[in-house]
Length: 274
Image (cartoon, rainbow, N blue to C red; front, side):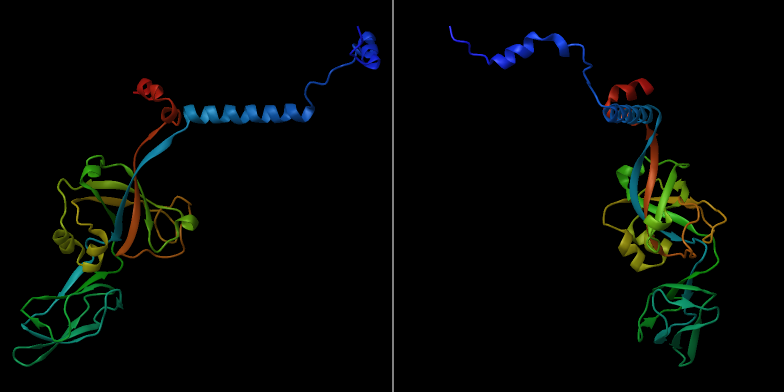
């Protein structure tokens, strides 16, 4: 029979001189990588068991001062001869904001009741007016701010006073200044309509921005005070370098509770926790 194996290969197999050499199974760098991976896994496991993830409900709302909104009305019946302000304008105490010609032909000046911001102009030049008709709504400055958030009827049943709230005013970049912190102070028992919102907020523009047509639950939010420039507490600590004003729209995160990350992967742990 012919030999199908090469003689050189057979000679190497027959010489045991290399059998006592150490076999390198894993390099040092490999062990370091494995140790690092093990450490990451341990940290992830500890976080999954002992860490927490907030359960968040999202809503829309605004900042406003409930005691600061004032209606400027006409004392007599007549018609509007001039409107000198628009929604969003800043006004000073005593500033003339409109002129009326009453039924006696006398010109009547309507003035701002204080420093503030025009929320809504309810009439146009030439509009006829009854006595005590509302002409302009103004939010006076320097009054305490609070948040108000609106959520769907179903979501409203999950919200309780004392829950934490994170607000992101439209005038602030959340990625730079963080979120404005607050606490739920009151939850309405019944849905609010667009008409009732108009009565409360005194601004058609705000109502149009907030009302979606579906029944809404109102959630009042007490803002947390702090020694920052804005005078409120923020997730970043310092917050933005600006003063917050009423009528500012805001998105909201309402924290319903917290849960361990492992319960999201293995629900059995949630049952044991309960």
